[in-house]
Image 1 (cartoon, rainbow, N blue to C red):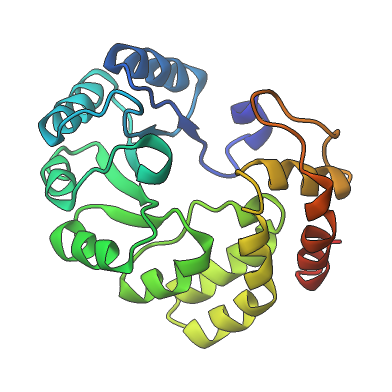
Image 2 (image 1 turned 45 degrees about the horizontal axis):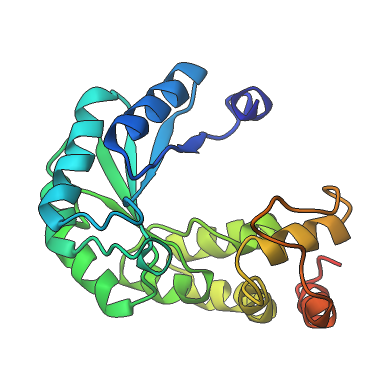
Length: 230
């Protein structure tokens, strides 16, 4: 559905990660066959592989699925942190082309860019630090805020990629409160509520997530108005 709707206007990157290597391969092949341009592979959750296990997991998927692969490190959600030396080793595999780093640590970005920034696109997974890490050499953000303010996030990243960080900060200023509000409850609870308020989707969310608690309605509305999306 997404490939058809995008209709080659933008690349489509499918989230195909799993804590089962075999399942991640199956999902990635399905994405390839559906016409996706790349796959996004989260580190295995719950089973806590070693760094060697992480290397072998991603190496095996890359071998089996001939398309560009973007790694995704988000230890706050997976209880698994892929270290820079492991990423550096994986960067030697030709079809591993990037990493979404969502540790939120500036020092982690510095190390990743120093180790493998010439071989991998280093991409922020956190809206709140995107300008800082792009100044270090990151290539952009896989964004939560962009679900509700896509044009602003696009213009922010475009300015930063062009080296105009003053413009990027001007664009970011009215978004700062929104970046925070997107996590008033677990993402994507606030995103779904905001999109419903904008008339873009129906209200509701699948269990085990629940609809946004009413105590957060006004703070999120305030942030949306400040960002001029409501």
